Length: 283
Length: 124
Image (cartoon, rainbow over all chains, first blue to last red):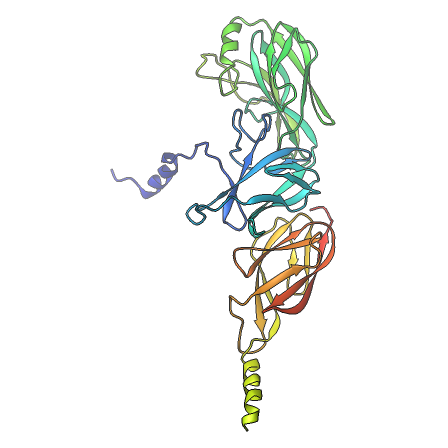
């Protein structure tokens, strides 16, 4: 049978490795090189757990947040032996630079310049800084915000704090967070109590609240812990490198582009752990 | 007649030179917020950078060579920086802080006035 050309065309993208995790830089506006977004500490939702380079740039940076930037030549042959240019903010009142570390101080667009030693601009890129409108918490890499947390005893859960602006845009950058369990006998913080990414463990059955604070924004998540039948295996599986937890049910909110919110219930399934569940929002 | 030769040579030399007749300014980059850049005015919001290509125009039939030295210089770099690039005809304007300044034009080591520049404080 002759394969129709259209079918071949459709097969082509499926055969290419489009799901790699190579760093995806932001190319400079002069096309000479590319800027890489680095997370100077754990907790920036832009960088996957355990990675210090973001797969892509966020649409905007959170006001008050910090990032690291790095520049690479697009064509190493043209610049073989050339030192990497210095990065500099166009205006330090908006984006303060301290070497490769940048702090977002004022909302608006700001250019980051790549300069050679003799003050020639090699390239530049624009970033947007946006004020924080709302604080949210998500489970692992699930983008749906949690409204409550349901766990089984012994279970651990990775939680990611994230902030959005008035346009519902997820904002990047390292920010200070505070995670407090009202009753550590029910839910304890395992790690990340002052970072954007925290791990909690359900200790005993009961209910409590988990309070997350970022700047002037506070979010309180009701937590319900039930007695787990296989709490030991849950605890083991939660310590994998993906940070995903299994058979964990939390109530989440679906947020549409307009900022409207509806609630649903999710449960993650992980084939490696043997536990099962369903994923999806129930409106 | 011989005494007129140097004068004639001088006149011929002057006549073969380009005569500055303004700049052709072209935006090379696309800033996220609109800017106004020409040889008559520069207006940008603070924080932005924009690359421009600049070509001096001549009113005589003798144009400028691409390697004729040309400089754009900001009178107040605290308001607007004008930075060179690897390309001698390409410059990057950097809006540093709100205010007014003027960008001086120098072609073949001769001053040719300046372009009024305004950096706006308005939120982007």
